[in-house]
Image (cartoon, rainbow, N blue to C red; front, side, top):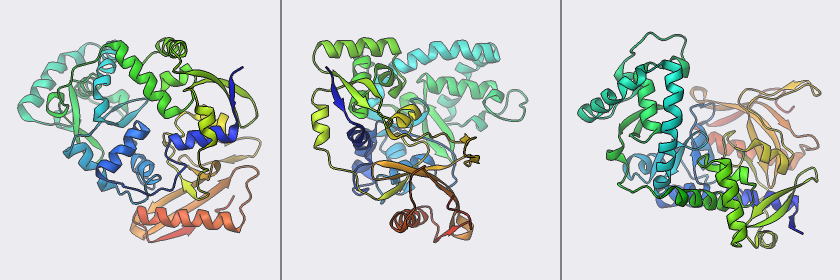
Amino acid sequence: MPLRLGNDLARRVWLHRNALAEPPSGPAEGAGLLALIERLGFVQLDSINTVERAHHMILWSRRTSYRPANLRPLLERDRSLFEHWTHDAAIIPMAFLPHWRLRFARRAERLRDRYRAWQGPEFESRLQEVLAHIRDHGPVGSADLGPDTPRGAGGWWDWHPSKTALEFLWHTGEIAVTRREGFAKIYDLAERIYPPQPAPAPQATIDWAGGSAIERLGFATSGEVAAFWDMVTPEEARRWCAARMADGLLEPIEVEGADGTLRRAFAPPGLVAAASALPAAPSRVRVLSPFDPALRDRARVERLFGYHFRIEVFVPQARRRYGYYVFPVLEGESLIGRIDMRARRQEGRLEVAAFWPEPGVAMGRGRRERLQSELDRIARFCGCGAVGHADDWLR
């Protein structure tokens, strides 16, 4: 019979693997910040800036001494990080770059067919032209190449052929993001950004992807292993898990969900016993980015925490609608609600529009004080001197 990991310990393992079960202290720049990102695997990028951009909030929630200026040197000076793709645009340790060679090759096959169907062969005629322009004139953004054709209301479907060529060349590893101006990507030839590293054999990358995913997930199905980096196919992940089971590097366990149901997963031998020795998470309240890596797999979060989270959620039974962009709120080892807030920097105020506690979560004095302490910390982080609340903020 497989070992069983109870729900309380499954949550604890998950939070420890995501650096959310420890005090948010420690080094938040240079080598210390790089080590944190390597531990997480990647940090998703997002342009929405209602309080602070997602990647900055993700790092701040784990290291409250972090400031947005701390990230740029690792990306643009030291080149110890690079921008590319996992399930979405992300910041990734440069040490992982060799394994992205497999992604580059696979993306080239898929995107070429997709872009041909979308724009016809016109974007392909721009590929060498764009590469030559960058080689001769240096880094460029899509605005530097100018529109080739009239565009409509905006959005990715309105990309002009040169913009499409840039994105194709970036996804396939021919060019790389050298910096950002505002939030716009500026590209240069990959050979000027990436260190010269040979591509590992495909099986070596599959082995790395599986092992590094399990290391960060703690326990997972083969589908979750495949989805972590979104680099290997579900069938490759299934074969990898079976092979690791055969050689004793993985074992089957049963993971208890928040509703008491059991789900089979793979885990390294000894995980269940080791989970019992993990310290409990601090009882402090933390506001998380909606794109936090701990929340990326919404189905996993719902199974473990009983917390249904989407960027926008309508619950007919409760007749309530959450705002488009709400922030999950973690207290200790439980997700206790979601908050709608915005930084009004010109007014020097973090404005809280609403907080919705989860069913059964009582907002007593102690919990409200812990939430307010977190809001005060966020206000300082995003350059606001005070926190303001709408009259009906506590829903």
